Length: 451
Image (tube, rainbow, N blue to C red; front, side, top):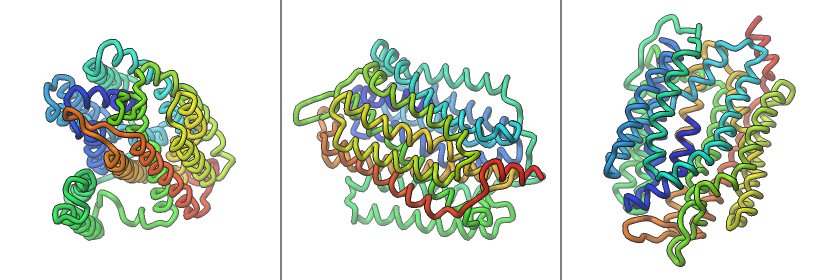
């Protein structure tokens, strides 16, 4: 999943130019949106029927979407494929949940840290792979590699990953709650994306936002009256749970939402008065971002070890502060390879800390039988935050952009504003971490649950 996200992000500049589209934001966002819609259903299904089984189902759906995208000859069909492919997004949430179920308790923290560090490993190797594919074979090669990667992953899970032994004794899918929640999220994201065209005070924008708020209110009513809700409100009402979900969703949404900004900045062409992209090849971008990727891996693994001795709140808050400082530096220093590296060295440590500590914090605040639903709630919050932040970043960049031959390009002020947005969101996440009450450290939480 991390590799596919990396490849798609690096390919979007070439895709935008090839299809002459001003709507390239949806190339990445449509899959995240579909995956976010699917997360509550997948979390519930994983708890009821087995997490491995659900991973295999969503991976198979993702494979279909990858095939549609690879075969697409127009941008609309390409987006349909990317939307279907996004349905394997819940696999990440289920992977962290199944780790808790099958690893010995003294290795859960380390295993979760290694899973988080895998994002950094992909960030290190993925850009070189995408450089070879894009620079030598074009974006179509990237789309076909996604097909092969999804198929290989599906087979590896089927053969090697054990099924979780933890199940809900009974259960029924809450379809009304999921549809209301997914519809509300979709309406908000679509309205933000179209706000510049419609006008922020237009009837269309107000109608979509009002409709989403009504759907959210109905969702709360339905969940409070459903015997087996998709998102148990009793779980979310606990202060230690909702504060962790809020802070971690803001932090992860920001660090994943920055991807489109940095990738378009690096890979869009340099055209005087039209585009202030750096015009790098994907391979050159891989070399520039390699130090950041190494630091993500090191920080993630180190954080997984430290979590046994250090309060997780401090690790999350520290990671968010470092990410905010790094991207704050990037608002001023993003015009050369050395400046990119300076930004990445600081932000990379923060990103590694965040991706590693988030699943550990979920482990600390919920019981084992609540793990799948809690991970689902966190992934849902992360997905919503990521889509909203990325969509807002595209809106800000487009305010300082130019259209040429049907393709949207961005000027330097747009990239600067996008990075300021990310830095600000990371700073907010650091402040939200202060709301989290003190909880047992990983060792204590596991010992108490084992007893």
